[in-house]
Image (tube, rainbow over all chains, first blue to last red; front, top):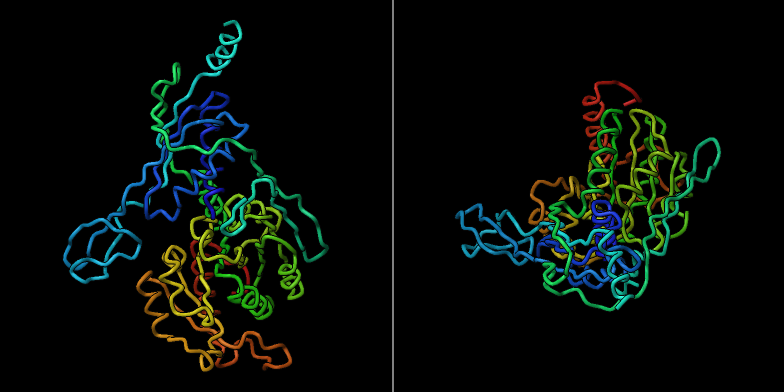
Length: 124
Length: 295
């Protein structure tokens, strides 16, 4: 259950880039062979981001399938785990994708704009 | 908060305890505790920022573990220029990491500079065991954290201050899952698996074994009493990591009085372990372009 530490890393890395700006949305890539469980990151996200500029941000996680290439027949195919077996029976298979762990993008509101929002609502 | 393995409560600060040779010193632990609180469970929206009036999308495109990996790279560079060998020892709890380290430091410390970083959730028990074997040690207590990361090890190394040419052993938290993902800046990754754990550990926990430089089978003296198929265990390691070296160790539990004075008596496999360490250490020294320590 290293996903809590992973989620903290995500939060820290984003705050480092966006400062106090309110973050409305976060998009991550967590490959299916990365060793990180995307559902666990979703579970941790609200806990970790509470009280930070990411609080209440919408989290989207893309989970690309694993990719593998057979060293025997050269076929490329989707891999469900990091020990895939080629349909030709060969286990000399290299994982070539699906192990990404990336922060793709965030959606931010500049600090000044964010501060305007409650003021506007207050005068309504 | 983690009901899987009870790890990584962000409210639980990491603590560092240094055991120096001259005198024991307490080093302040870093506290990377993040905020914790309750918020509505959600997190599967479209996340594209549409309808978030005033929000703009910023492309970040950075690795989630970039900070850890940058710190690890910096540690690795400092270690390399000082001719230090840093070995990250990983295994499930009870595979024999501390027992191997006790034997190793007792046998090597007379001729080599040796230092140890111990990682556990709680207690300084392991550090005391290593300290009594006669080498400087820093204990990292991760609280509820389930692995060491590059920041913890960086801080521990600064507290330890190993001299050039030192062999530094980093004993990770006993866990076959989480430590696999975190680069600590080590020179080599060693995974221990005891034969009492069964044949299937490598294929059940492939991330851990996939990046090991060396896999050490421990407690091999128990093989006659177990139904374990040793060849299947080794085949599993080869399947996950064809490039890993594999070594077998036995009888490390024997006490000083039970065993001969020789540092690597026949039957333990320790001579191979020490040869492997000396080889890796020699390579680090050669790379550093200096000849320090008594190799």
